[in-house]
Amino acid sequence: MILILKEEVDLEGQEYQKLLDFIANFPDINVKVVEFEGETRSVREIHLIGQTHNVPEDVLGSMAGVERVVRVSTKYRQIGKHGANLEPVGFTYNGLHFDQDCLHVFAGPCAVDSPENVEETFRQLQGLGITTARMGAYKPRTSPYDFQGHGAACLPWVFELAGKYGIKAIAMEVLKESHIEEIYEELEKAGKPTGVIMQIGTRNAQNFELLKAVGSQQEFPVLYKRGMGLTVEESLNACEYIASGGNHNIIFCLRGVKSQFGAPHRNLVDFAHIPVVHRLTRLPVCVDPSHSVGSKDTSPSGIMDIFHVAAQGVISGANMILVEAHPAPETAWCDGHQSLTFDELEQFMQDVQVVRAAYEKRIDIFSSNLVKKMAA
Ligand code: PEP
Ligand code: MN
Image (tube, rainbow, N blue to C red):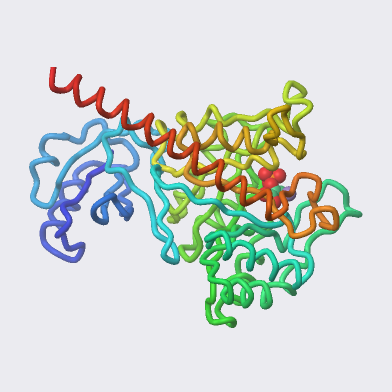
């Protein structure tokens, strides 16, 4: 059960104390305060966890300070939309807003390699008006002989260069808890010239200790990548782990699932699940066309498959795109075969704009139909 508090309620005040006193009449209920950023205001929810079936909804609903009472299923208690009964929410990080309506493109190399390439990446992104980048310092690789990333050593110059070119956030994978601390320390030392969104890669999608670690800090938002062999439900439960640690600033990323049926693409594209995640949860949804397709193969129209699948994501309302781009893909130390050049990224951005405009037209059609239905 979730109580949505009126905005003005003071958690130190009498109204809230009376509420707690009333709830204390029912045994085995834990009370947890959860704060979200709503569309028009911040929202404070009181989650009652445990045996709530005897708690009278109407009594609680009429108590001072309570705006609304919502009975929720136990599934996705934190991230769930609960039949759209709860306020739409999102979050702002370093001046960037994320919710189920936004669209951001995070572009850059798979892995940080040289300072020259990183600087050129940021310079090119700035030229395209992009303030959001991707790049890995810690890389989980299938073979132990492949480049594992520069690790903490590259963070000082990556952050400094990002600040120089106006990059507000870099999506960067973490593989273990100490990576969160390293990123935090290096950002502080550099004077926070940029921000970081902590990426949980598909290989760690059910690393519950790591999920708890990113969930128990509030400094960095989390980009959770769906497990390549996990159902939507299993992956959403993993996000529930993050949220129940206290961090609700989560973006859910679809990146394709492992299946022979996806061949010749690297993974079977799963972007049809965007509306599903939008319906079930309050999370913004990202798509990763690079790791889904895994090549720069091009259709007879001249459009790369990476562009086609990104378009499939955007036309369904994706809120973020994670795409690999490198100043010289043929020399990249990781995933060069699927990385766009910056000329290609410029075309990609044009294509995204066309498709986003089409998505917005679709929304107009269906919202005016909804208004007509309500008026009838
Ligand atoms: C990545 O985005 O750098 C990455 C390794 O992706 P995934 O975890 O989806 O394979
Ligand atoms: Mn990659």
